[in-house]
Length: 126
Image (cartoon, rainbow, N blue to C red; front, side, top):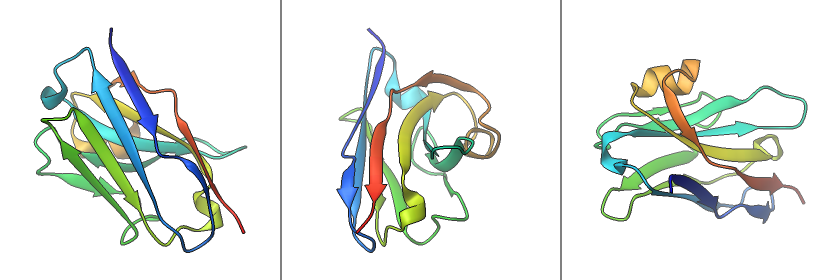
């Protein structure tokens, strides 16, 4: 059964850190680029960060550059999002997605996405 399962969300204070994980099963993981997206209440979904199938290409949204780092472990079928220096505006449901697309197309246009996870909530608040 094909699955993308996010974990690691929770409540954190401003300036804190969280690491999200996206565990994949049911498809050939290392053929796919993986992206992290988020949607805050009342806002459109936006691309946060995407990584190519081999990990050689990475893209970050302007609002998270220098604070978030994406990585993947193809042996574990898992992608990670290390989030540092969190801000209240980072509060959102975070989703991972898989697609056979460039990181540019995935993150900017949300194009070429085949599978979505159900999301994990990140709340940044004091």
